[in-house]
Image 1 (cartoon, rainbow, N blue to C red):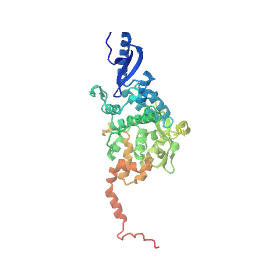
Image 2 (tube, rainbow, N blue to C red):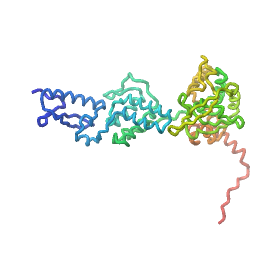
Image 3 (cartoon, helix red, strand yellow):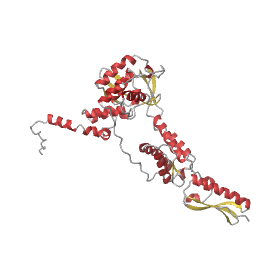
Image 4 (cartoon, one colour):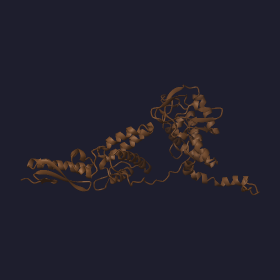
Length: 427
């Protein structure tokens, strides 16, 4: 009689398999006669099951639908792959987030799936798998079966990026728990990685002047003067229209943003819907820009509102029009998100200024305003923050640098006489 393959045994005249599943030895009857041919087939099945368990693709309920072991392991028969649950979750999530956020979520899930495997069964993803995923994303190296790093991996990502990816995946796992696909999220006990808060890197006044001198065109110069002197988000500048500007009261009403090409939305937050006051340089930049675009073509654009499926139509004569300064003579009627960041890089290079991200134009406004003694609540309102707490958290250094001026103000306004104290109300 032929030898039994590993994991195959006789049980009452029929064949039975044994294998290790989730750290426990289990046995499953095949219900077929014990013959040399059946032993060989059973051995091949047992090998394929072992491989599926190792790769996380073993579907216990599909392989042994009548097994009493299903209840022991809490398997309900709903076990599905990571790819399937991701598609379900993203489609339902789409109704409550913006199109821009949806695209980001889709990208985050795709990247994490590439590491875990879209065909991986959801129930097989463990706490250790999440920690391994985090290491791989952070370092750029893949962990092999011996928990050694593969040196041929891609470049690692920042702590902030890894935290964002895993927060998105964790939300999907909670969805799976609430809907009975898994009993417990593998993210239990996984805390976000600690990260240091990046320091703002504003332009100095000298760098600012050199930057403007390096502008390749008057419109580009006007754009960056407005950006630095208002702290507007770049998507808000791309979507800015002359219809939003009150030339008598010298204010701008921010009503829309552009975070995805040709997809207009309200500002980033509800507080982003605001009216901002203009500094003298910002006023002059808009006056200079009037000659180029004030009498330009008016466009009817669709603004996608926060409520799912709703939109409004705005009539917009855009303040900054890229086709006016396009080198090849071809350009759009409004800037795409992030597109004028290239002009920032060009100007820095021309001026010989140390490189920093274009978003520092917003930080420059906040730091300059604080150094000038402006009220943090006023700055928060100008920039569209929910509260001044964001200003305190991010720009506290510039506020403390101004303490000497604050004492001068107090000394100049406090008289020699002791201020009268409020009197107690007599009963």
